[in-house]
Length: 90
Image (cartoon, rainbow, N blue to C red; front, top):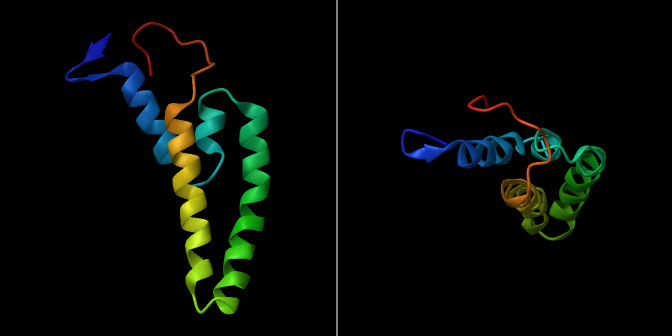
């Protein structure tokens, strides 16, 4: 099914990627509850590690949280949707 030029599946993939600004929410949105919860719990650790490495590497460690979020968003975009959807409803 399509709505305009973008399919509903494509819209759901985009929503999952956008929700991954808070790592793990995109995975939970797609029905991967366990993985999403683990990512949600580990994300403060990655942020903390990035801040610590930022001091140790003259700021280069600050890219770690951004790379982590980008990877999680990419993964959430490409995950198979496990939720059951009603026809035509996001």
